[in-house]
Length: 505
Ligand code: AHR
Image 1: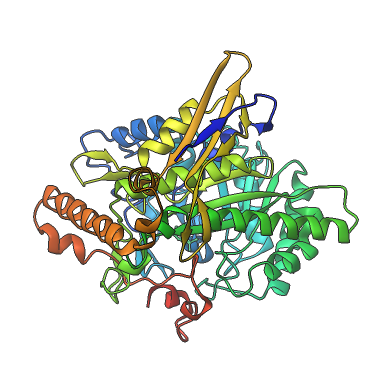
Image 2: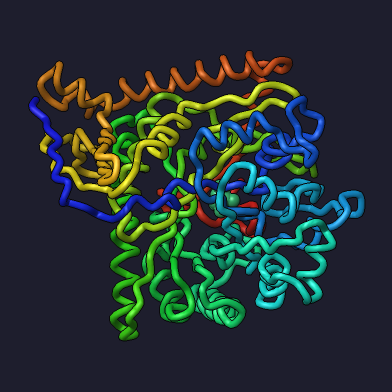
């Protein structure tokens, strides 16, 4: 079958926005502890940060980094993570049922961001806390000097303010698993008041209000409408979160996951613009896709990775990725770029060890997953302006997303250097169509899908063997028994009274 991708340099979507190559570090599993921070590691610096990981983060080309959560932030007291390390309290993290040593806090993380050359994007706790604590954190991080909290920062070794520009107003407040989960009405009011107060301090801050945790949420769309009607004039972005995985051996649907992301973006843009016109506002709200990735949630469900023990930095959500996963991740990145006129910030969730492109072993190596490569290559080569190509190709039917194109692509053109780059996604089914002259093979997804499943099993086995003692079995039980709503039906959302762990049971 003939397929072509034609480029017209004038078909500009938007200038390449570096913030689309953001990432995410949450105090979850081994992302921070034994991930970016391991004081006893041979490459550790004076702060305890692994230099080998810093190098990989730089190579990945991650621009901004969202911190410190995620679900974690909804129970977090930022004050626990400042001052002499010996005095910092150990706390329970209810989101992931783990112990938090607070050995890494805002001051260390700001230094780490400098090392990696990335912008710090901060989330405030609107789950168990509110306006006062958000203002305190803002004073601590951004005020130059001469106030109680800015002087405390200086005393803690940071004479210069961090000048954090982007702030998330809580995390996934639409999710019943979220500590302090609220209705859209309640959250919209709280977010609006918090944003208004933060802008009284600095009206140039860029504030992100929580949108939906997935397009499968029962409140999807309506949540954004209500929240934005309350907060529109005080905020700058609405967030989107989406995770994808191959299910039931259906590779064809999996490879078309970006269609869900496209639907997600279009729905949120339409809703935000509806509110804009309803309120007769002059301003336009953009999207911060601040959690997106591949996450094998279904595989986590039957493990005891999240259990009743209170442990420091347990192995949680350590997915090992295949080539198919890398293809899908690349396609999601293409989709973000194609929508970069409205999606002006994005964060791959997450960065190290937890559903991550970079993995580490304590005292050992740091290594790149398959998903590292589409991200790093795109981040490096996307320069200048994003250009929409004209694609001519066949399509195929998917069980989950309807009709999907066999090819997807986006391009960039850099006027200054005269260089262009084309980012294509050609999926396995494209080749099948070429060879077999039809998409019948695709519809018989299980055959292809079971190959992918087998590859994933083998990858995991190899990884477990390479990880040393404990082998496959030790690795397998490290997957959590997590259920999560992303891209899924409402039925999976709430599982009884243990609200925070509804996600995991
Ligand atoms: O990235 C893992 C988790 O996914 C985050 O903590 C949460 O915000 C989302 O549900």
